[in-house]
Figure 1 (tube, rainbow, N blue to C red):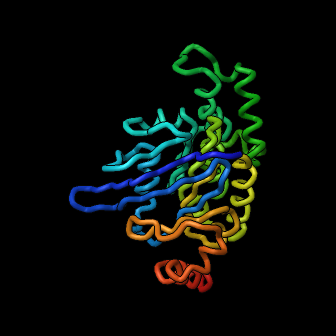
Figure 2: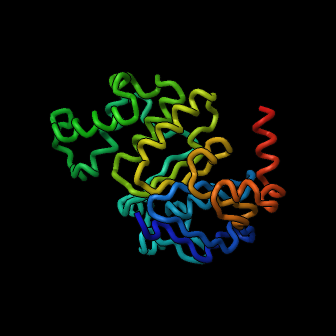
Length: 255
């Protein structure tokens, strides 16, 4: 794939007199796996919220496949091909795993605001749901309430919901937070499989995950990107080591 999937130019975000994002420029190519890392309070979640339309930018432009996203609501940005997950898992805990996935597929399957279809009788919809369950390795858990899944399985379900609409730009916010090593390995392999050929943008604190999955890494410190480069070059960058990476790797090794 070629071309730019997401392009940010001169992006600033202030809350009152406090400036959180400070003139940020970033271009992410189509099909690229891009990690955004940085210390707590760097502005990573704010940046995600700006890209997805939850917050308006104070200044600058954000373009998805060349289309300016200014003024668009999150659902409108989603329908242009961008989908995201959140730090806190968002699923319907009392609905079955299958029902969660099926709900996520209703709009892309063309049901829109239809109130007269029995979804259990919609062959194409249910086939798509079964295929998605298979892709996230949850077919064997299809009938149980989603709230009874393990933590890693719930995150897998949320990733499935995130990709259900067919978006070609996937944003994952701390996808492995709070996981054991085995759970992290499971989710990393899942992310690699289900985002193949798509643009992946993720915020992640686990440096092992970041260096394993990423084609490029951007380091955000106090609302500014201090480096964007291939993983090996970011790791060796003295400015990055001083500002963040050295302390992050030491913390991870001591955990």
